[in-house]
Image 1 (spheres, rainbow, N blue to C red):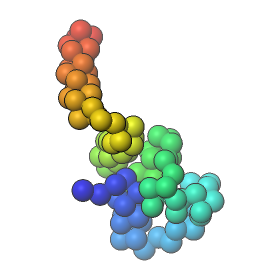
Image 2 (image 1 turned 45 degrees about the vertical axis):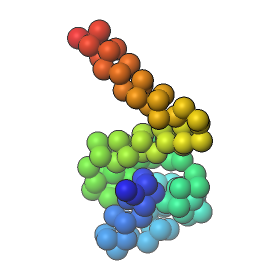
Image 3 (image 1 turned 60 degrees about the vertical axis):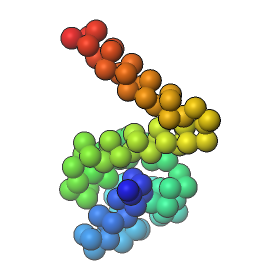
Length: 100
C-alpha cells in the first residue's frame, strides 16, 4: 500500500513532470513538495485537490488516501489505536444514519 506522497510522486513521474514544475504549479517551494512526497510533511486538503487536478488524478481516491494517512499518523503509536479506529467506523455509520 502506497502513501499519498508515493502516489503523487508516481503519478508526477509517469506524466514526465519534474518536481520543480509541479511545485511551481502549486506555488510551493520544491523542498516542500519533496517532503510531501517523502511523507515528511503533510499536504493541506486544498493542495491535495490541486495536485489531483494538475496530475489529472481521481480527486476522491487521492483525498481518501490523504485522509487515511492522517488517521494512521494520529493512531499508529497508540496502544489502542485499532480499537479506536473500529469504534470510529461505527460512530461514522451511526451519525450518518442520524442525518438521513
